[in-house]
Length: 101
Image (cartoon, rainbow, N blue to C red; front, side, top):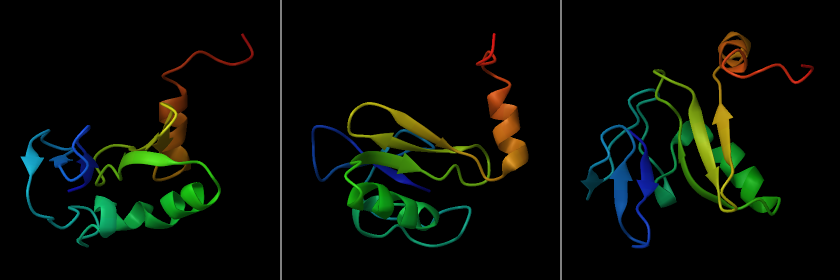
């Protein structure tokens, strides 16, 4: 399970799989590890730290738990889609028009 901040309450969290508010951390169903501080899925921790350390502030995230691509929501409103591998990224690519058309 991943947890995403429920705005505007800074200390509230919502399960990104069910959409329901939660009061305790539970392990990620993909890697089996518990979220760290801020409710970040362990498999996204390094990339989120790198983004924030580089001045690209993040607001929420979910690793996808092996069922779907993950995502990282940026403070400026953009969202990054995280694919587990090259093949999955090509499937996501096909959902959009070609950049050369």
